[in-house]
Length: 277
Image 1 (cartoon, one colour):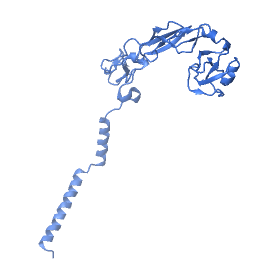
Image 2 (cartoon, rainbow, N blue to C red):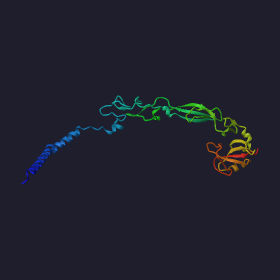
Image 3 (cartoon, helix red, strand yellow):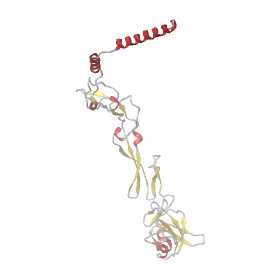
Image 4 (cartoon, rainbow, N blue to C red):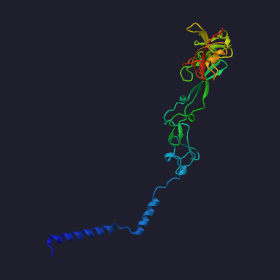
């Protein structure tokens, strides 16, 4: 026979098992009843709007009539028919400055250089879409620009400095060595030296960049080389001898760059030739 303590253990196990079975029966939902509850929950659940009527972030799309009616909000108004409309501006949007789109450019009229500014006037339109402000200023937010003249040069060897950098445009000297007048060249002070055409008459037909006297006392004329020819050939064909050669660039053919040999044949050279006159 089992002792009294062991009988008490089995009795407690039987009681707990009965209690668990009762709990299961108490919360057991009939199949039909469960289906009815699921159907009721689905019917009472949220109704989702047609995606075609909604824009980014769940905001109604422009031109639509939202279910439940149009409600004004950030960058969102309603027309007489209840359609969503994007206003051009909303005072709650961050400020935008159309002047940040202004640009400067240079153009020439004969020997005159003109600095022009593309100016954006008027207030920016800060609404990008219903419920959304523009993140940054752009052309679509501003009126078309107007072109205004900021400064102009006053002579053939003058230009407008600090134009395209957006500084304070003002007339100033153009680059030295540019051709001007009747066979002349521009000097560093912005004047046109036409006497050089007579001094370097032997090099007629070539672009003369400068003239002077070398360290050995030789008078020379600097000319722009013909591409593909070295400075020896460029000087000899005008009756002179090559005294030196310098690298240049296509934009500044008279700029005196790094020295190179007279026998070097390459594009963009400035040749220093002894003046035969």
